[in-house]
Length: 266
Image 1: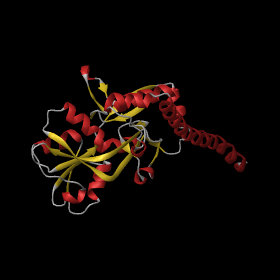
Image 2: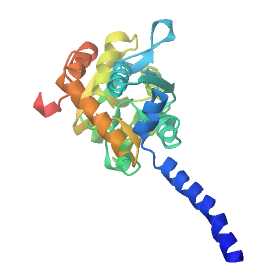
Image 3: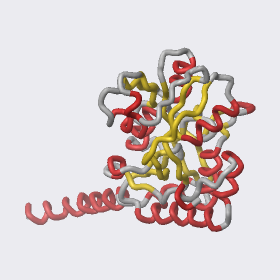
Image 4: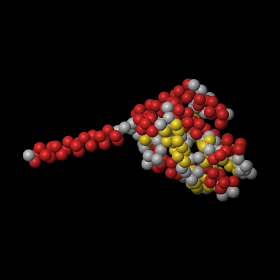
């Protein structure tokens, strides 16, 4: 009798456990389509990729890419702004579904997240003051110098890979660019596409420095692992955007060149 009761009691527990596993195993695509919203992590302070424009509305290349991807999935993009230094942790904590914020694809990040195919190809470039006549041609030239980078960025890892550089980390680009303009840094390091826009629109006395040799980057959309349906849907969306000219149109609009193709292929 006791054995029968024990078995009977275990049936609802097993069913509950099965339901829990099933719910846990739900693909992110199902979740996104069910809510009708793709939650996108973004800085909101990184022109020309994402920033607050007129009326405090988010604008920029990555904003437009995220909206187009969401539309291909049949949902709307909802943006969650956060500092770059906390954006990876936000994705891990499930605060948003994806990051569309110039996240370079590398093996270290692949250990924690899955990535879409690349939607932007770029390279690392040094930034200097206009009145600085020194010609830094590589990171080796910055040994013993102060170099500003964003905390947790690919450029942070790149700068720290060369011993002897005094690497200064900041929450984002606006902070280290102000320090560079104020002569508190010798140089800064960022995306060459961001730099072109900054010099064009900013009043800061800065200029472009050397594009670092061998520092080409592929930028993708990271998301949590074990979501195969979502991974395919994101890649299908980007493939469609490449084929119908959406990515080319957006990159020409924001950068004056097609950034959707590898640098060597241009």
